[in-house]
Amino acid sequence: MRRRLSIRTRLALIGSAAVTATAVLVCVLAWLALRQTLVHQADQQLQQMAHGPAGQLDPRTVPQLPSNPLAPPGNIRVQVRLPDGQVLAGPQGTAPLPFGDWDRAVAAGTVSEARYTANTDQGRFRVLTRRGPQGETVQLAISMADAETTLRDVGLLMIALILSAAVLSAVASRLVATAGLRPVNRLTQAASQIAETQDLRRPIPTDGTDEVGQLGRAFNRMLTALGAARQAQQQLIEDSAHELRTPMSSLRTNLELLIQAGDRLGPADRAALLTDLDRQSQELSNLVTDLVDLARSTAVDEPAVPVDLADVAAGATYRARARTPHARFEIRAESVTVDARPAALERAIINLLDNAVKFGPAGQTVEIHVGPVNGLAEISVADRAPTIPAAEHSAIFDRFHRLDTARSVPGSGLGLAIVRQTANGHGGTATVEPRHGGGNVFRLRLPMLAAPPDGR
Image 1 (cartoon, rainbow, N blue to C red):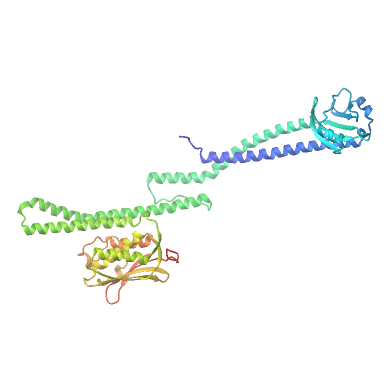
Image 2: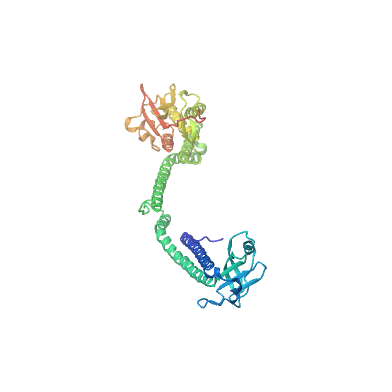
């Protein structure tokens, strides 16, 4: 598997590449500007020569021109092409200059003059072609050897500068990347140590308000959430083990009695024992089901979607009627939209309805109201069960909490815990208050959306 470069190395390469590319661009532009300047200087010299003594020369004396003692041999060349096609070149001993399309255009009078760079037997020359007073075509040329030497030397110097810039920028980028990633390294070491020790209570040290500091604070918030989740999970396991111990012990005792007694038990005792075993197994099954529901109520597998709370409450009421056909339910619902996980919300409402049926008298009517209240979506379940004391209004929603008057009623003590956990998971609240005339009113309030799901 191909190994990727470290972030430090990649940052160093990116920084070095950026500086090198900038240096190359600047040097190339400077070199082109220098070449253009040297060509312009050569054109100015040729222009001065054309307006100076060279412009006054008799074409017949051009071959006798001596070389300039102040310039290298052949540095300046003059060539005249007469109308009859005869070519006169000077100084003495120099080869003729090339006569191309631009020169023929000047000779034909199409253009007044032409400037170009030509390759000759003695190197590259900058050429100025003009028409003489007698119809001849005059070519003045100056060698570009000095200019090319200057360009070559400057080019080598620029290459050295580019290489130096690449090396220095690589080193500087490496140092900057190392210094910039030092907080990330500390963050990585702290996170690795937390992973090894499993100690979620020790926060990662953070400082500053930059991106690294924000990342560290995000890690700390995540650690806090994980610690709370682990603590809640541990508490749930401990509470579950405690609650499961009693029915399991009772089941084991009855089973041992049934096995040891064998045929010595009378029909009535055997029937009572089997009835007790059935009841205990049912309680154990209900407890396990409630534990699963409690664990599932915090799951994020079910996405939150806009739903009509009235529809969810109607579905929960229908299921409650099917589960407890002897109970009576009366629902009054007004359409109100919430952003919720429908299955979890319906499970919480069913728990409220089951709780009302379980602890209320047989002839009661459980009343369900759905609608907006003070900017929130509310569902209330009113029963005629014994009024819950004010001191128990908060504790009644804790896991496995049972009122003294309700300990004889079968149940796991998890139904209302699921209701509060579902409410908290949706950003809402679950409360209970006394009902006028006796009983209790459980209220589940959730944030309300502005429009129903269909956009009406």
